[in-house]
Length: 197
Figure 1 (tube, rainbow, N blue to C red):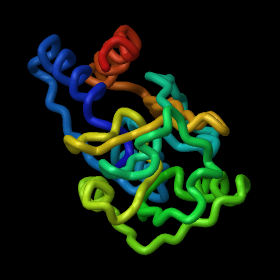
Figure 2: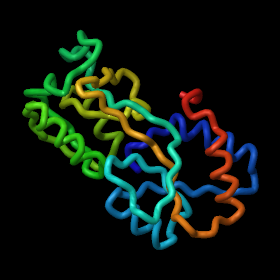
Figure 3: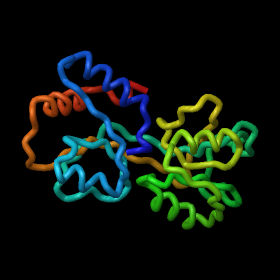
């Protein structure tokens, strides 16, 4: 999914390829609304998801790690003086929206429930554009803590309410796993996900 950050996955993938040099990995970013169907149809062997909605009943999922949502903002923003951000603090902000974000409805509902009114002047399906626009002072956004990749981008944790998500490795229940996928699942289970950040 487009909001799963590269740092922890890159460390895991590098170790996996070092231990299994004969296996070829093909990573594809798929929009959340298409991922379930593509996984069920066998287009993908596995998926890394962080969806706030319940998974399809035919999926087996293993939690890899839990991460907080943070608010990303540019240097000099009023949030810089805060140690933590409450959702109500977003009131009056310009919010930059990821069009393919799996948590779009979840985060939008949370903002509304806490009485914050935000404008949404810009949308993009590309994470690099969203972060570049935040850094340029065009607005703020929720971001998973492992996804902030641009130098200079500032973040603060959200703790009222505490906003977290589980990043999971998903396969289709009952589908036979080939040797490469079995190796991948075994390595994922034994990897120190919390110690890799």
